[in-house]
Image 1: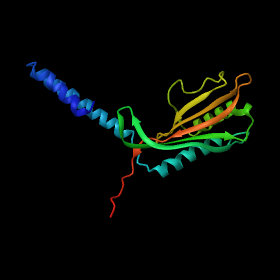
Image 2: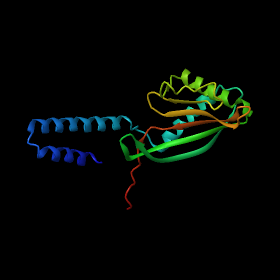
Image 3: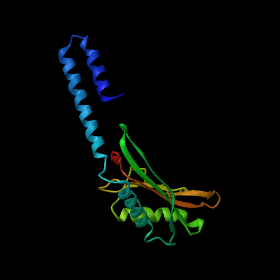
Length: 189
């Protein structure tokens, strides 16, 4: 429901109640909520272009593999630039998401590569997305979820199991940009 319709419904509900004080309180609370929503959404929008977001995603992935042993080859597995949905709904925003596959290493090294990516990002000052984001290292399919500061890119490293018996797998790194304004199209001459 749009902000305007929500405000109109709240006002209409109290128009008939004959309680002007309550009506004013509801109007102020609604106005404060809308202001907070707008401010929160604005904080989640980055001043980036798609090219800048893609370059930063590549840099973050390279930071993760720079000191790894065995040294994997970083291969882009998937790339998308698509509409960005925030907790407040879809806006006129885009977001870059890039998945990288770590290749050229034995499948038995995948879980350790995830840990090495985690350690590299921690050393760079990147933060865990939540208290449960630091992977269950007893699980062969360990995964970590982090984000950069101050630019707020989302990062994950995970082991996709290919052999349950041995825990062998393929390590992946995913980097997702913060939301940024969609490019404006220039009018045709």
